[in-house]
Length: 319
Ligand SMILES: CC(C)(COP(=O)(O)OP(=O)(O)OC[C@H]1O[C@@H](n2cnc3c(N)ncnc32)[C@H](O)[C@@H]1OP(=O)(O)O)[C@@H](O)C(=O)NCCC(=O)NCCS
Image (cartoon, rainbow, N blue to C red):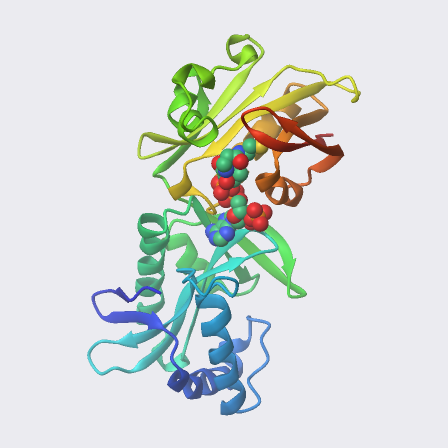
């Protein structure tokens, strides 16, 4: 887990001894007014929370490797005072990373939350290379909304979160750019990921150059890191106005950041604009869960594609 440094602060992972402050901070009704959290029963409950947080949020429970994500304790450099917490959290339900913060009331209105948030945003975008982060605030929490506005977040919509009216915000990482590209531009990703160890000519797909085909590429600071191709190809088992997805790939060091999801969703949107009603493809077994989470379903039984491996046919009704 990181230790972040700002002009006046350190942000470091929770320690068990922070439990007392976490307990005390949450006993202030004004601090938890908009959070939907109940106060801890006692310091012991806060200690159990911290212990659990370290083992399940900071560390991937399956592998014990660090996730790089999780809230951090804000400590003032000058006197080691506990100011509060700030940090990033991965939400598996929405498959997105949010920014959150909470400070002792005595430390409000001194710029500490903004300074901490800024450090977490830089860490999210430059170190973790996340394509975007979100934030949620209670509808009436004006101070928090001002902070997010000042950090460049865009208001998206009002939702219900923890049974409360909540404003949802979004901040894009400007290092990323998603755009339509030519077939040839997909090769620096298609070849090492999907045709590894095979001759470069093997990257070519029959419908690559057809005028109805479109290719999407995700760039990080101008370098292509993720691709997908969408082709006018109807499967005899399906009905409706169909397209086929091919060549979905993300370079290994950019995976598990939501890049493929962004590419696929842009493709789905463009297909809907073209009046297409169904997207289908042959999915590698390793990618099944990724597609299932995005609403795709398996059609039929497993089959083998020579030189590539076992696959399932998958589809999604777009409208
Ligand atoms: C399949 C593939 C395209 C997915 O690319 P990706 O950019 O890693 O995809 P995403 O980040 O959108 O989602 C992948 C997983 O990361 C998770 N994830 C997304 N953002 C995350 C984050 N910030 N932190 C942790 N996990 C995150 C998603 O929930 C998803 O989990 P799941 O697989 O359990 O559903 C990529 O692994 C790849 O190129 N594989 C090799 C080629 C291949 O198999 N292509 C498909 C051919 S059919």
